[in-house]
Length: 277
Image 1 (cartoon, rainbow, N blue to C red):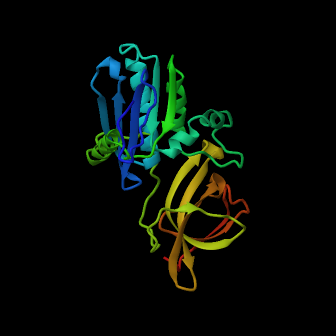
Image 2: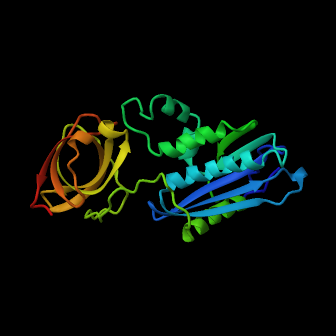
């Protein structure tokens, strides 16, 4: 029986299992990142909780959530036998981690592309997740629980945020791309463009390699859309483009044509323009 939450609901996982709580944070997103991990032993073991807090100079929230989970697995690999672990449960508040942790093996089998050919994000970390988890010789179930609903969840959240406040490590797999400020008045994060053959005028503010090597490279482009009625950049999206069509430079403006695939939107035609800068 575990700690009672304010709503009087009791959380019970397994009194014979180690429970590892993980969390990730970014300030802002993307920005300085941090992870928090709390290892809680079964009551009969009489061990104090073990805590881990690490900060990264630049990353994203999803990468930090996944890194926290991988850190927990690595702790089990290195310390499981010392503590005679036979079962471990990892608890995350990240639906990104929880909903994909079992599907990721199929992503790798399909060369990290979904059914529409769109590359999956963070394949370096997911590949590490698969490799590390395969080293465990006991059951490690991953469960989801809403964050900050119990004292231990508040604690792991604080550890992640503290890591982000004091970054010392580098997330070597993170590709920040080439950044410049967006001119769009809407400060929300960019969403995937629902492509349907549109012709648009855009300004590039982020570009990065999404997948592939050499001639098969696909770039992920984030851009503002120019509204000719208001004469402002009014919307912020991302889409993809093959390397052979990649002429974009950050802060430049272009006329583009999209394909007809809203699940994997690709730019199929590009013309440089000067007068919108």
